[in-house]
Length: 169
Image (cartoon, rainbow, N blue to C red; front, side, top):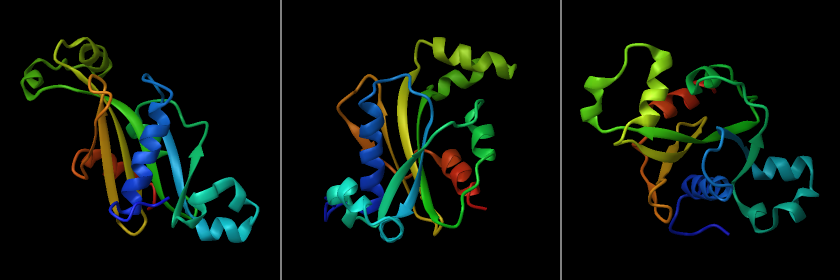
């Protein structure tokens, strides 16, 4: 059921973050297409029973399988959506370091991930980022050390927003 106080795109992002969180941490990237629910129901009216209360939503997420291997930026660069897809949501885990760690970053790309995961001040986070063809976007994050709190903030993942928007070009 849609909350009257929560824009639908944000509600979908929070729902998908909770869905991925239910499987715990150390998850691969999870990508969801967002389709207009009315279009899905027109194509297959039998989905009404499967969707339940979500049949009244504007958008329905559809999980994508078999994502390409490799760094996130490369993976996003291989994705393109058909016109029927109105938006997408990426749920992924990242390592965040404090600004003071910048001076110690290794020069070799292949060393950076190992260095970051071993850094004593790192924070593991899960972000869920959504964009639409029409330019709407939102995101939320959960810190691994603070399992209960999910923070909605549309300004936490600019590079991911750019990468996801590019999948619609």
